[in-house]
Image (cartoon, rainbow, N blue to C red; front, side, top):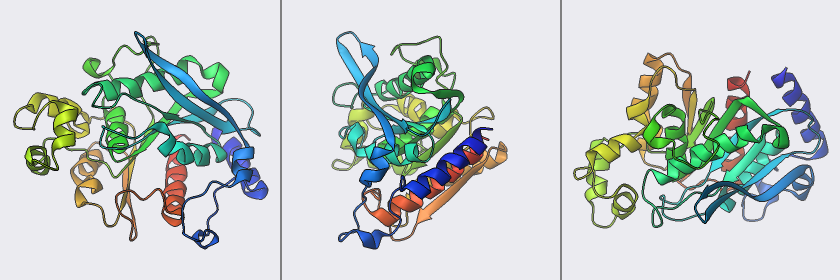
Length: 307
């Protein structure tokens, strides 16, 4: 029933222009644009507080199609920035485009590593999932079908969100503890998934490149192996975890292909896959044709996962 409803919504979206432009040539510089017709077809609630830590609050922007009635699958959108910078607005177009395809899509803020080191960031992601379930009636969320998507650091957090269900140290106290933080599908983009790898060991110790890792995890891999393991999506992967589909740019580092992660998923008989976007760099969301390929891939994967 969910898939039938969403197919109708998608057909209506195409007919009424509530999708992103698919011809990059329409934009003089090829940049990603969300047409006004798409935005006009969405209900938006901006700056919704989803977690509190004393006086500190965290917000999300929530979108859903105006033409939809009843419960829809939800997708949490997690921005990148080396865990140290960025904000939820950078995944606003991702959330809007997914909402136009029939999802409740929420792009979230989370505490950056300069404010609070790991595991604060995954605590916040899990709090966002719990909030959507706790407020399912208000936002029209199908609580049995919640997914996540994110790029770079957001891709890592997406993968960790997928594999760390039931890991008490990573749940946090962001509220709504009586609701589950487990998700049913994940699209990690440009993501690092093996924090115990030799590559991570070398980069974390590199004076220039390793700064974001040391700030995020409190030191190098050699100094903080227990923390690196706790933060590693691969270390938590088991048979209870949801399907994951990886998206990365052709010009990104091959570590973002998540080979060991996907091989382990195959062993566990969990659906997974990889889309490599031709000619794309690590930050590929800003170019229309790369964005569109990501959107088509992610939408197809979420629809299949939520059947």
